[in-house]
Length: 198
Image 1 (cartoon, helix red, strand yellow):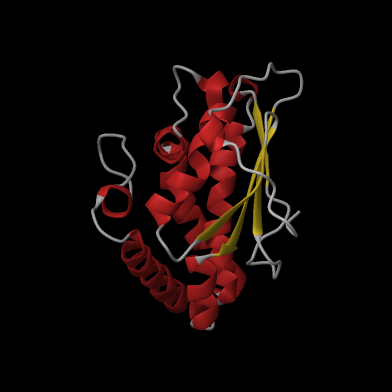
Image 2 (spheres, one colour):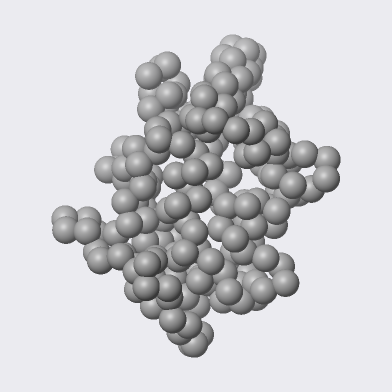
């Protein structure tokens, strides 16, 4: 998933074509590994082993991921909120494909909230009788979230609900750190709150 030069993985991130197909191949790989481990380790231990394996490599490349996913650079970490506001939805749609549905719920000078109402990972593992495996992919968000919540980024992230937990959406809530100056957003990135969404 991660290439040797420190960039985000060539198979999943840089290949051309519909990214859904690549993510499905990855999901099948994880499902096969889980089904091979579960009879010997049990459900919780098998998930823990896979989570450790997936997150170990991801942790080494979290800053490269943050650049590829959000546009956040280590040269300008204080611009994290602006980059997320501009890039989160569009880059998510591009990198993860049409089997994810992103709904911009709030976009203002201090908050950028996006709800994911359809998730390929959640759909795939529920369809194949292993909904508990979706939590592995949810847990990978904590790798970049722990980094993003560092003071140098001047941003804050919370995800109070997930589809994997049975909620109606994964609520990705980004906000500017308290006390930080508000830089103007580009006019085309400002969206009105969607009716009926929190």
